[in-house]
Amino acid sequence: NDDKSSNNVELENIGRRKFFGKTAILGAGVVAAPMTAAMFASTAKANAAEYSKNKAFVHPGDLDEYYGFWSGGQSGEVRIMGIPSMRELMRIPVFNIDSATGWGLTNESKRIKGDSANIMVGDTHHPHMSMTDGRYNGKYVFINDKSNTRVARIRCDVMKTDKMLTVPNTQAIHGLRVQKVPYTKYIVCNGEFEVPIVNDGKASLEDVSTYRSIYNVIDAETMEMAFQVIVDGNLDNTDADYDGKYFASTCYNSEMGMSLGEMITSERDHVVVFSLARCEAAVKAGKFKTYNGNNVPVLDGRKGSQLTRYIPVPKSPHGLNTSPNGEYFIANGKLSPTVSIISIKKLDALFADEIKPRDTIIAEPELGLGPLHTAFDNKGNAYTTLFLDSQIAKWNVQDAIDAHNGKKVNYIRQKLDVHYQPGHNHTTMGETRDADGKWLVSLCKFSKDRFLPVGPLRPENDQLIDISGDEMKIVHDGPAFAEPHDCMMVHRTKMKPLKLWPRTDPMFAETIAIAKRDGVDVYSENKIIRDGKKVRVYMTSIAPTYGMTEFKVKLGDEVTVIVTNLDKVEDVTHGFCMTDHGAQMEIGPQATASITFMANKPGVYWYYCNWFCHALHMEMRGRMLVEA
Ligand code: CUK
Ligand code: CUA
Image 1 (tube, rainbow, N blue to C red):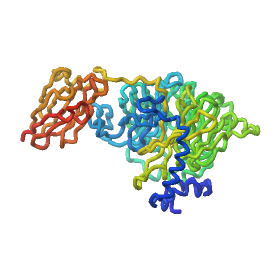
Image 2: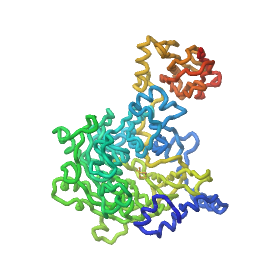
Image 3: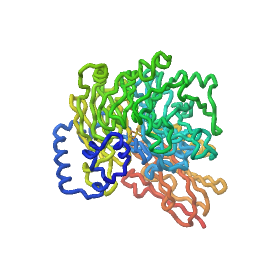
């Protein structure tokens, strides 16, 4: 077996039995082989069995019950899914550039991207919605960018990114959650990679004594840093309690090693718990330092600090999930076949030094190989993905605690095969007090034989599982492009999306302000403003025509085209595309959008509407003359 995937790590620690069973197909030799007739046949047979009870079917024209927000992983975007149909309803470009909407290209999106406007890539993992009293409030979805150390906010009324922050003093924002109670005042997120705390090129690769890992607390409304906390170990995933008191993160590499060998020498790593009140008080009292020329207060929460407590758990834990009854933090073992259940009620005593860290662990049930993430229903059951076993383990939390206390009870309710190698899973409303136990989605990292083969790169497989009965049932296979790490599902009654853009929307307020300074009323005027070599071309659009169908600029001008869509008809979006200039964008109904390009080629160039809007959509066009 010449498998080169990270499975090797687990392999050494857990033994090869399971790997050679279900996961042997991952071996490179097998993957390289073409799909065989037998593989097609077995796939078809497996699927036929599921169709009979498919209550996930949403008839054409019927609406889904839930919105799902999916991370798009290394695509840098977020996607909106309809649940249970698993139809992809929309894509929200965030850290990526988007050809359709012009995200990353328009002046409005560049302003939102701010200091990272020049970065066109991202790696999103954890979309989470803002809450009030532990319940979704439909206002924002927050999302991390691991690849460029950013956090962004999506406004759920227009489903567009409206804020972006590059987090200083750390690298690779990974785990991200929101404060649940009393409301989402803070976003918390993990800087995964430790870096020299003053990272100015003077630190070395050999002496790592100044390397630090940092927990980040961001003001959800302003999207500015509130404070940071230095911790021991590499932070992985995080979650908040339902009391507004504690946050917890899993940490691997408590050794602070740089190589794989160094990172997995200890038998135990830890969960670090943060006391919000103590951190806020420390900031207030000025017990912080600042680094790298910014003003962000950095607290020291390393071992021995009064701000944090370190709870030892088996090495390299991964997911961290709070049960919806507010009682438990669950740390998922990854390399260990167990999950560690931390009693949140005992944390006050731990912070008061009345008990030892391990006393907070009230059970450590064994579930199977490679537990990564846990989701919850409203009946006291938990659903844990087993990456190596390619299964979801359904288990009862109270039974697991009772079993830990010596009672003879089987806490495992069911193990369901999923296809294949699940990472995150998520239940409908399951990260809130409103967990409803209806649907579970398993985000499987490999699809292998589940779909028509599409070349060496295969889609992932997002599987929908009915959990409303005693038995979990797979009802849908959903191919997904790279790479839904995580998702959240919110009932449609919590959402209030707009049909038209308000003309006063902050998304393009700056553009309207520039127009005002130019003396242009974007709602009634079509005008060219020359400002040295800069030319601003203001035009309206109303199906099927632009308010200006020709204009002239000079070779070497920097041209900004500002289009205001006067259509008030729901769903009538126009586009603007300047041929041969790499400039195109979406202009939603009643919105204003602008894009800037260089007129660096003499000649006549057509611009056209690239969003289908009308029977005469093809005729919606005009000419730009670039005079030599
Ligand atoms: S992580 Cu990807 S499977 Cu980034 Cu939440 Cu666990
Ligand atoms: Cu306007 Cu197409």
